[in-house]
Length: 444
Ligand SMILES: C[S@@+](CC[C@H](N)C(=O)[O-])C[C@H]1O[C@@H](n2cnc3c(N)ncnc32)[C@H](O)[C@@H]1O
Image 1 (tube, rainbow, N blue to C red):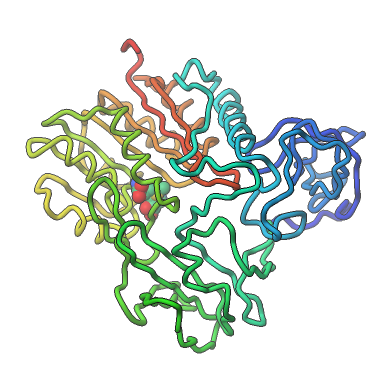
Image 2: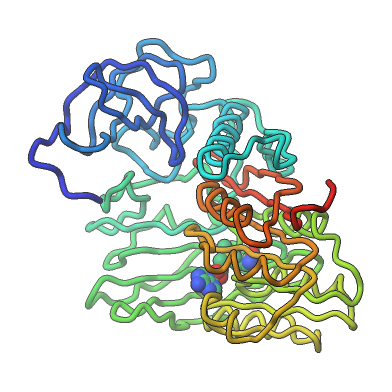
């Protein structure tokens, strides 16, 4: 969080007209003096009283919360979650919007980022302009899909579990998180106290029934006895170096996706929505259409999800190389894909490992980078490999749009053939996209 400027306007209130949605779970407004406000808990077209939460007279912009709605949008509902609202839980951004409106807001953000950062319209990227809910998530207004299979509860000084307030270290104690998956809620983390803990993470794996609790004690605190409503494995995060140690049970959970079981060790990445892994594999494979005997790269491969999907499809005569920076995830990926002779998983950062591999060509490339995106260097490198198609799985539309602009302007440019957007994080501002690219010059 930025330091408060000397000319702080925190606490000041402005009556404003709310403009369009912006990336990050807020909408844009302007004070009468023309200063930009990013307003949470508002919706486009509303008239609200916005109270400044960050920034001062000479800041480039102010952050604010809508504390009073004078003229509500037709998309507004009463937040189903009692912990949502100005100054409260920061876990969700759009509790006050109808489910369909949330997806339209996300679509507007994707469209705006593509236009602003890559100069692309939905038509130019073969996108129908919609954000699609995961199967089962299309709920009526006022209901909330319980999708979050991993919840990291923050624990306050008195041991009460909760979630952090927006852009704050303060804990909002929570008796029940509505977006937590049933398997997480069933563990009852919210029903007891956790003295001495900084965080308690609950994981409910999909398809296997595995449950895990990861405890991060405060310095000097002793681990509590974990007696929950059902058997779980328990891990502990070292307070000094962040290393994860087994307390009891397995040091991993087993997830099911793409008709396969995946071992995911503590700290290893796995999609949080229970349908996400299958949906994204399907979207990426439908776009890439791997053929027997082809070679493929899976960059930022985590525990090997897409590498496995590609290996299945390119067959014994094909080959797949995965690259991943987390040592633990690499071990899991190698274990998960041990049946494939022609899958190799390299450990290290893509930017360092990819040039070192000496690979000069590949038929297919899949990349699924973290929120920061891949960056110009990697994108440029990828355009030199002559891939028939590239699948870009993106959890941040801004990073995606930036990287797409690099694909377009490379010496051997790629253009987007199709783009699909999924609402894999209902009630929050997050959105997942899958873009399929091909070399410029190939017909759609
Ligand atoms: C969005 S996750 C995708 C994981 C995997 N594709 C999946 O769907 O399960 C991004 C992964 O990139 C890894 N990562 C982050 N920065 C990296 C880098 N510079 N080079 C290689 N891997 C990186 C993270 O450890 C994480 O596993």
